[in-house]
Length: 180
Image (cartoon, rainbow, N blue to C red; front, side):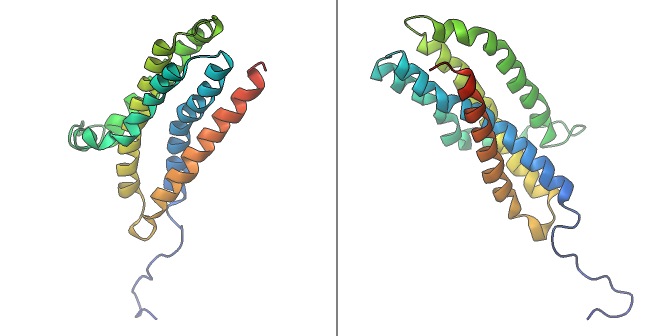
């Protein structure tokens, strides 16, 4: 029992609810392009695209595997006024949204033809993954700074849950709009 006048150490999630909600939201937003990209191979298979073109599309996943190459840049280049992590999150998240809006008008033309342009589609999704992987680096760092020390390990839990929710949302919401 603490001596009179001493504060008891906080336990549980108290004080971290807002941080956890923010992390879940940011990780969920990262999972959306990943979920959309999971649908593309099925669409390409329906269009009877060659295995080589399907393999070309699979390179979109490389940015998450290689994000360690530019993580030091994300951790060291920032605006002191905006903040170390927000300097990357604030421009990257709107860039993902803008690219989604821009490419949404192009995807039907890319996939609608008898011979889909897999290289252009790959370019769009590669850009999505580059942006999402860059945001992931910044959000991982944000998790370490906004969560209290006692709850820091929950950052990885938010990552797993958030990206999975984003993936499932994008994947399952796309399916009703995709004609059989």
